Length: 395
Length: 84
Image 1 (tube, each protein chain N blue to C red):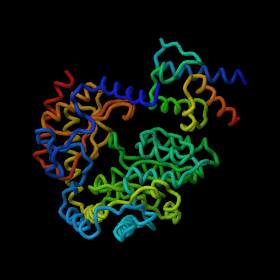
Image 2 (cartoon, chains in turn brown, green):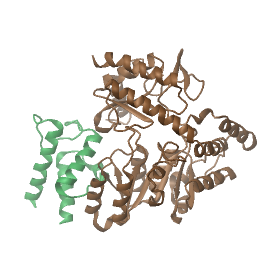
Image 3 (cartoon, helix red, strand yellow):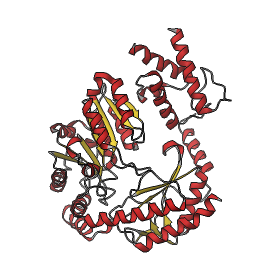
Image 4 (cartoon, chains in turn cyan, brown):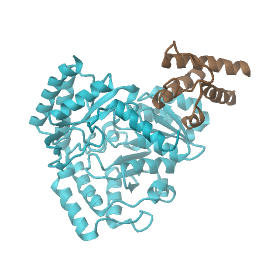
């Protein structure tokens, strides 16, 4: 097969799965009206497939801060953090994140994907081992590959399985980086952090927790799973993203290990990319303040989560194992999932369609992301639509 | 040594039949992806089963060079032998 034939094969596989004219992936959004509403084609739709958990993309403070940053510092830094791309805002955001997590230091990256790529490939190298949850995000897999370390998987959310694999490594467990996630992006379930921490301590390993989906969502001040479980000081490295609860784009890593700062000199995804724009940094700083104070936003988010999760469960949909802002309906076939996705869109609701092999255990998912700023009327409309579609999808 | 390899091959084929269906004929030359339609996720899950069966660690990086049943059996056999 030639170089370009491979891509033709991908196109053919996609065509076989998805009917002509259905733009499931990369759906064109024509206009955005608010954190929860937009236009696709001629249709006004409700966003139920974004990661805008606190609805901060339209927060006035964030938009004002971004506008002011563009006015005073321009549209971009045009340089790496390593060179001319570390403005006072970048450094201030790092201090603010470090203080938020009561950690020694923080590094800010250009995207959440790069935060994992940079942190993992900076920490682990050839001869080391990365021991990752089987349902890890692609950024974790890619970071591991870039590191050159040996990659071993443990069964999803199974601390006993993790322990078994560490035991097999013998003394090498000391040069092992364990990686788990606060909330998993496919099914919305939390990592069993207390058990993972116990195992990693027993084997003198190092633990990295990705709080991408749990930042702003879990814990009194929104730190994530580390705050909800009271285990902040037992996790070695925490990564996360600005592109979910913080409504921007970018990523971070915080740690009490002084070695974190050395990643600035060895981590290629940090060095060889331009730094976040001044507008991104400014809006993220404003969003972080709102996130920390956002106790009421989190309460509203969880009210919406529990309403939708219990409604879908009562309707007989198969769901992820626990309520979370990521609510995944699990369908047996890609055709069923596509029918549900299309049905929701026809009723003005945009969600994410996730098909194998990107899904756990080969299932197809229609994945909803709930936001604190979804109104009661919007949530009721969602519930009624799922009820209406239930009969047609499963008949 | 050959007996060890044959033992690995036999156990591996047992796991593969569970994934691909018992009616599928599996030989050492069978291509895992093109003939058994084992996608990347299924292959990774199979590796966890194999690790438990033989009580070894199989880094998934090593799978880059694996295409056939024989190549996978050989990899497992090599790791198993290094452990002993």
